[in-house]
Image 1 (spheres, rainbow, N blue to C red):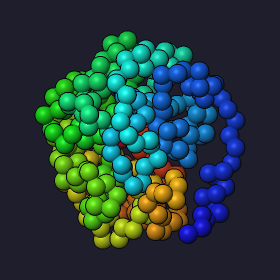
Image 2: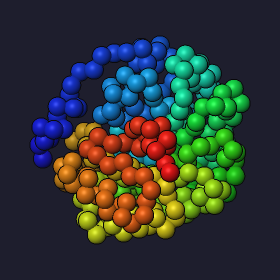
Image 3: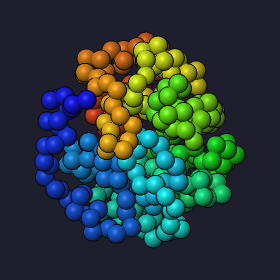
Length: 282
């Protein structure tokens, strides 16, 4: 399936290498999901001096068919990355920091306690900075959430990624129901919760409506909806390219179901304009 013109123009336009990109290139221990996952917004976000930090290395223990992140046996945790993230926050004068990670099934708690270490370092030094964590499922064990001090967390983000019916093909090692339960558990702590999905994987409209209702049932505050773009011929194929009009329609449906903030568009990704979305909550 050929890429529509409105997609190509954005994806292949060259962006000016700015201070953020140069800084990250010179920081050997920092990874960003912007670069590792080949996010189409990385030029735009870098131009605003923002980035989403990928912690716990850049090798994932799972093999989701949509994802561009490297797969294999991860290296041991490198705590020096915490110092470099701290320096990046100071150098770039960030107001809003997003932390995400690869899935680390090799760690006893899936990396929850490491998220806490990074959060603690940031919040104790810069209490005014808003923090969002975009987390894996921590080995599908809700007990592991207890290793995070949620007083350090402003937004908790955990992506469903796709409809229940496609999990077997797209996220074979993940659980749709567990992900919903994780969002529900964190909402009990009175935190802002967020989730994201991709479309174009072969989902049907009625399945998307059910997903929106499922997210509403666990009181998710923010939903991001973006187009799936296959990273390579080896990855899951694109079944459909949605137009911006269709994204607008999905936004209206999700908002009609009761999700407070819905960001829906061709190039929308989980942490795209995260601060602006956070500030837009009622």
